[in-house]
Image 1 (cartoon, protein in one colour):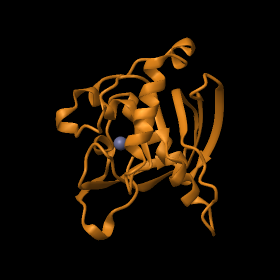
Image 2 (tube, rainbow, N blue to C red):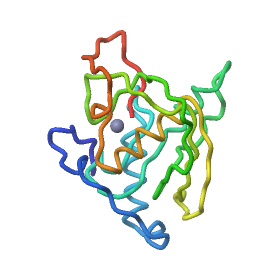
Image 3 (cartoon, rainbow, N blue to C red):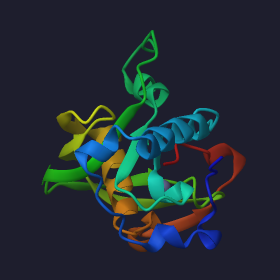
Image 4 (cartoon, rainbow, N blue to C red):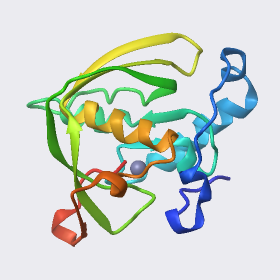
Length: 177
Ligand code: ZN
């Protein structure tokens, strides 16, 4: 069984992850990886997304938890909770010039958070877990998550571009990806 490996014990976090072929998406390796990652993300109270290198697999794949997507809707929480979303070989095809500092943490760097300038809007192209091409525009929370996760596939961590990094206290626990 895989686990979320802390950064200091996980050299994969600094590798450029490889692309996955469409045939491979349907194969046992990628399907098991997705299942493991969903199981690892589900109990993380502040975890919103997880990239394959965080569990030691240097492939271009990340997932976004359905529960974090439900929480971002204004007003009542969305019911039923949407499915987790899977992004394979993701490419950010458009990015707004406008940036804003975002509060950011990472499951690979527990106990810290930082302020990171991120584009407000992005468009992403990827394959889903069935090998179907998807094209999704996002703003706010999800745009921020996409940028953090694609960075993971390039061997980058948020602390590389953060303007400030802080030790986390109980009160400032927020979403981590
Ligand atoms: Zn992260």
